[in-house]
Image (tube, rainbow, N blue to C red):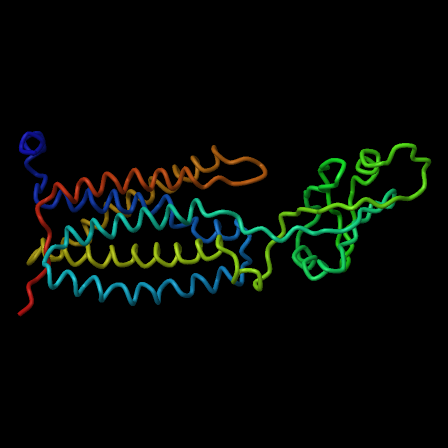
Length: 306
């Protein structure tokens, strides 16, 4: 460590350098994930209203976690250990968010009518057809029939009836042997990427995985800011006016890394689905470097209780 310090210019404050690097790495990590937490939920099939409710709970979780961590820090006087545990929790919770599975609407069973090109949902599943009533058409779906599976483009939905745009091709693939041109029905299942209704969330494991992970990730992130800020102020002591200069490096890293993370995500995505996992990988890399820095830095502490 001393060899590295000898290479630095004399104007560089050796004591404050780790604080600058910490803010640089930590804010760089946050830049890779913070902007994408909500859009991941929307892509996974959670509607906008439910997403808003989830994110209204996140500040409340942070309010509960901060005093708990503050109590632990005051009793142990070991800020370094608390920060490392919170960083591990941040990586785990963000990973659960970014790799949470899609919440898909239930499949629709019914009859496909040829040559009209209408799919009528079975009476037992009519309540499920409402999942696609507010969608933007056309919707690219799959028609799973006993004979074969066909790519289907849903042009519109009226009640429990779906109108398919490529009906002639579908009917030609499904026509029975010896067909003479008369109308026929085929028993099929229609799979569409429509949003699930709020009533379906209570029994959805992917929904609860996403919700709990987002709340934990936000609470841990907010608590990390509070704990590290308190530790940095203790290190600065009478030079507390220099706090903004330490935080400035976090702002710089945020501005640099944000567009880079967006570029990585765009490069890994396709026209059908956005892949946000490169953002998490970059987040994990920056957090690992920050954890290594915190572990190698002199033990951080806060003001002792009087």
